[in-house]
Structure formats: structure tokens, C-alpha cells
Image 1 (cartoon, one colour):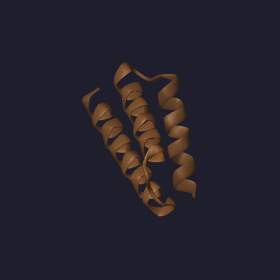
Image 2 (cartoon, rainbow, N blue to C red):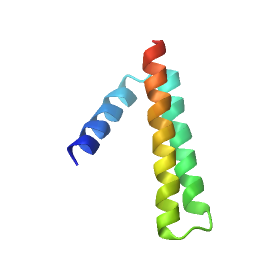
Image 3 (cartoon, helix red, strand yellow):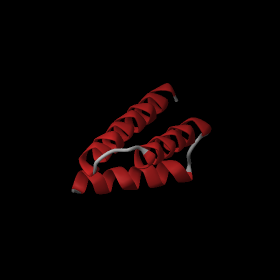
Length: 68
């Protein structure tokens, strides 16, 4: 639970000072999660889909921070 709060705080701070690359990571996640919600999934499959989107977003942000 605390980990999620820290991540949410981190994304909030990053989005305020986001360079274009981090903003792209977050936008891609939003689109990915939206696609999950539009698919013909049961709830657990949809959650797995969203979790995969989160993992991709986190990896994208980590790689962006490493580059900068």
C-alpha cells in the first residue's frame, strides 16, 4: 500500500516537471489501460492487462530517468 502511495506521489511530481519523454510514458500507459478496458475480458484478465501496462510504464519512466 505504501509503495503505491509513493509511486503515485512520484508520478505526480514527475508529471508536474515532466519532460516530453516521461509524459509520453504516461500517455502510452493511459492508452494501454484504455485498450484493456475496451477489450472483451473478464475482470481478472482486464486487471492483468492493466498491470502489464503499469509495468511497461514504470520501465519506460526508469529508462527515461536513466537517460537524463
